[in-house]
Every structure is written in structure tokens, then in C-alpha cells.
Image 1: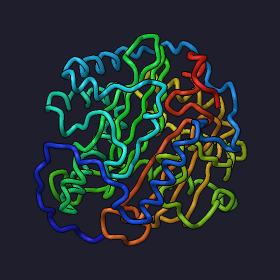
Image 2 (image 1 turned 180 degrees about the vertical axis):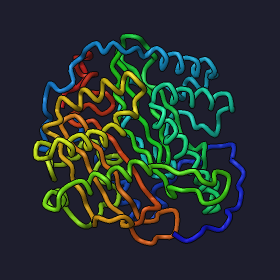
Image 3 (image 1 turned 135 degrees about the vertical axis):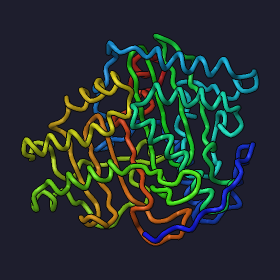
Image 4 (image 1 turned 90 degrees about the vertical axis):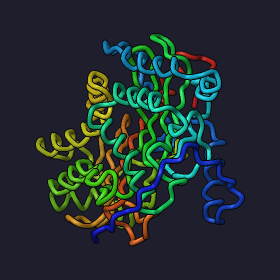
Amino acid sequence: MTAMSEPTAVPSPLRAPPRVDTSTVSQPLQNLFAGWHKNLAQPFTGLTATGAVDPDLFPLRETGVSLKPMRDAVEAFIASLDDAQRKAVFFDVDGEVWRTWSNIHRNLMRHGLCLVELSEQQRELVYEILRVSLGVAAYETARASMRLNQTLAEMTGLPLEFGEYFYWISLFGEPSPDKPWGWQLDGHHCNINCFALGGQMVLSPVLLGSEPVLAEAGKYKGLTVLREEEARGLAFMGALTALQRKLATIGMDLPFDGYASGFQDNVVVPYAGVVSTSMTHAQRGQLLDLIKLYTQRLAPGQAEVRLAEVEAHFDETYFSWIGEFGDQVPFYYRVHSPVIFIEFYHQPGVALPNTGYNRRHAHALVRTPNGNDYGWALLRQCRSSFPSP
């Protein structure tokens, strides 16, 4: 990677970017957005391996883990809002607005309240929601992704398109100890959906990433993200035998934006690669440690509940790889079971000069297959009027 010249400091705007008129963008972007709208028009079923949802994977149950800290943090944020802000921030818990998150940096379908238009005190209250809802490392990754969006503004000289505060907070239903509700943070490289029902939490879809993954200069010089996710995936691939690596490698051409990013709620991704039952005891342990990086995105207590759910289906867990295998080359890896879908991947430059696929731009995404993204498998069970897939 070549050294980066010192970027120009840019002031933070006080208003959210205006909605983009999609009829004025390039034809490839118009085609992309048309595909998004087509996918949104389809009723939600969730990511599946075959096109059919595996039933009875996510029962309503007691976890023994209190979500009161998260409720308290959200209620404190609500108390800071004026009437207009309250009207803008709330949506129905069973509404389609959940599904309109997007990693793209432009303001296309953003909703809720943009952090740049909140007071500093209100932004701190939003950060507190993140802090109590997420694991320590996940919180730091989320905040780093937001800060590196400011680095991107410095590098591109586009402060009206990129920035640390161009993230939208939305609430779905009222915080409750026994009724369904949730929250969403939506913006470039930081998309977090959190559903709660009693003591059960579903934290997915979650996409975290950055371009660049390292700030070489500027306000946040030295800040970096996703290095452990990258290193652990590479190390696990290296722990496989040559034959296992051959089986795990399902292609050489990296997918541009993975398989399950925004507006891909119903994508069908068949199981592929190496199944855990064919691995040695040591390899299985290393794979589980890799998965823990992602289950620990939930706050302590909830992370253990999520891990137990994953372990119950560990024998049905597959690891796959796309691209070359080496210390410097870009790659994609996936962990896929009936209850968790993880994909990590490098991308080419998008906002920065396009130099082909490289390790300067990375995403890591987690979904809950078989209908429980956004907690909707749980929601269907507590609301008989909610449509089934």
C-alpha cells in the first residue's frame, strides 16, 4: 500500500445529505436500485439454503438475560427528543422499513434521525444504545467504521457525501419488557438491526466495514477495523489440509458485495465448502473460535445465548472460501449453518481509486437464516396476524 498524503480537514455539515433523485444517476446505478425495489416487493422469507425455510429453529423462550440496560438507554434517548424528532424516529415493529437499510453511502431510503442533525448530547445517547447492546469489540468496530467514514471524507474532499455523523437511528415499537421492539442504525459501512422480545435479542442483519480499513493520516490516523476477522479467517483456511482447502474453495472470482448485503433478505445460498463434521477436533475448535468473533457482537449474556444456538447446529456448519489463498491477496470466506450466516470479503476501491480487489476495503456481515433476520421468526410466533413465509 502506498503512503497516503495528509488529507484535507473538512468541517462537519449540520444537515443530513438530501435524498438522491435516482432518475438522475447513471444507468448502472438505476439498474441496481430497480433490483432493490424488486426485491423489496417480495414478501420476507429470509436467507435460505434451498428456497424453503427450515421451521422451528427459533422458539420463543426465556434466556435468563435481562435487556433492561438496552431499554433504559433507548428510553433515555427518547426522553431527549422533541415532538418532531419523536414523530420521525418511530416505525412499526412489523413494518417493511426494517428492510430498507443500505451500505451505499448515498441517501436513498434513509429514515429516522440523522446523527449529524442531533445535538452532541443526543449523539452520546445513541452511542450508549450501541455500547450496552453490543459486545465491547463490536462497539469499537462500529464506532471505528463511523470514524473512518470521516477519514473517507478527508481523503475524497466530499464532506457532503461522507462523514462520521451520516448515520440514521430508527426505533421500531416502544421499548418494552415483554412486547416486541427494536432499533436500527443505518449508514455507510455501519448497518445494525437489533430486535428484542422479552429476554431474547436478535442482532442481524449486521454489516460493518470500511474503505479504507486503516487511516494512514488525518483526524483518526492509526485507526483500523476488521483486522482480526481478516486474520482469523486466513488462519483457519491455513489450518485446513490441502485437500480440505480445495474442497472449501468454491470459486476464484470474488463477489463484488458478497451474497447477502442490503436488499438481499430472501437470497438463496446453498451450503457449500467443508462441513465441520469432516474436520479434526482442533479444526472444529478453531472454526468455533472464528464464529465467536461474530457471536460476541452481542452484549455479554446475549452472546453466550447466541453461541449456544450456533453450537446446537455445529455439525451442520460449513466453511467456504473464494479467491486465492495467501498472506497478501484479497479473499472471501463464509460460515453457514441453519442459524448463522457469516461472510467476510474484500472489495475493490469504490470511493477511492479503483485498483482492483484489495485489502484496503473490507466488509463483514452476519445474518440469521431461515426467517429470523430482524427477529421476524420470533415476531411471527407472538403475532398470529403477521404473515408467515
